[in-house]
Amino acid sequence: MLKRKTDVLVVGGGPVGLFTALQLAEKGVEVQVLEEQWRAASRSYALALHPASLSLLGELGIAEALVDRGNRVESVGFYEHEKRAEVKLDALSGDYPFVLVLPQQALEEALRERLEERGVKILWNHRIAGLEQQGDSVSAHIERLSKESTGYSVARTEWVVDKSFEIQASIVVGADGHRSSVRRLLEIDYEDQGDPHVFAVFEFVTGAEALHELQVVLLDDSTSVLWPMNDGRFRWSFELEEGLEKTDPRVKSRLLVQLRDEPFPHVTQEKLEELIAERAPWFSAPVEEVLWSAAIRFERRLASSFGVGHVWLVGDSAHLALPMGIQSMNIGFREAADLTWRIASVLVNPGSAALLEGYGDHWRSEWQNLLGLGAKLRPREDTDPWVAGRAPRIPPCVPVSGEDMGVLFRQLGL
Ligand SMILES: Cc1cc2nc3c(=O)[nH]c(=O)nc-3n(C[C@H](O)[C@H](O)[C@H](O)COP(=O)(O)OP(=O)(O)OC[C@H]3O[C@@H](n4cnc5c(N)ncnc54)[C@H](O)[C@@H]3O)c2cc1C
Image (cartoon, rainbow, N blue to C red; front, top):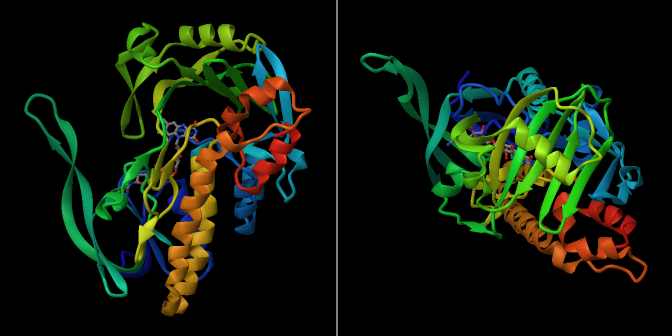
């Protein structure tokens, strides 16, 4: 049942918002989730769970079932025409020394099921439209959306606001993605952290056996990654030269693919085969069917602050990273785990509100460090010169974060 008053209102029912809500519910905190869309994502965008994310999901008791459904990646191979270097994930400590490749919708489904068991309400078709912080609480202005058919000759469906109301919350968490309304309502800047990169992304089926290696192809002027999924499925993401999506006939800017609620140029199977032949000739599995493909522009951004007072940001609402190492979503889970224990403490003891400031300072500084890490990595004297020359490009490509990065970098002599 919709409640007009709650301890925590989580805005956004993507993976990080659902995870945040579940962490809160497990700590006995009353929570409600708002989601603008009318249903969950139907495709796998962020498709891999880092070892640290699996440990957090393990603490919630849902990792094992997910592990059974996904493909384990046990190593990362770095390539240029052939394999040039490798790191093994079993060097990591923890219960899950591997990366799990799993469609985003499978993760979201597991989180939603557990939330339902905990009695947490997800308000689909509801969006946040205003926020006012008053003393120790926040008044959130909510709009409910409903479908309306319009048009003379051909009926067209539009989403319209059919009801507005307020929810009072002690704390609001903005997990509403890169176009975050919560961030905008707080007037927090989403600062550029470098040029965007365009990737041609293909998810496709082959008859090949499962592979347990993430392949990162570092050519002089492009980075590409192969994520091996289950059931002979793969995802190749090839970085494209700037502007290519406008000039290459195999990148069809006028033929748009709708992914979530955003349109992206379609990329043909012919282009996939050409890119594989050019950049990854060792990948010989014939492409049987392309499930989806698009040219996607990935930006790098960081919020100038992770929140203020009783309103805080997690996940893509606070940062965007390049797609190779699936870092934005996975670090989002670590942020959520940290933010939620702080929230639970502040709700019990309102005098400890400085804990929330500590959250913002800690994670902004972790992201600044991560974004500048490439320039700081120092090769050893015995480091393979190929690796040493590419060191600045390696941090965004590894599917780990925090202390786990050091363990992998040491294997590369960095
Ligand atoms: C096509 C595509 C491909 C991608 N590929 C990769 C990849 O290869 N590697 C990678 O690392 N990442 C990739 N990503 C990004 C990845 O999906 C995100 O990092 C991840 O989903 C972040 O999770 P989140 O929960 O923070 O935000 P989101 O998943 O963006 O969830 C935010 C949710 O908030 C909802 N919302 C927004 N505004 C409001 C509002 N006002 N009120 C209520 N609800 C609202 C949205 O509907 C959405 O469901 C891709 C994204 C897309 C779209």
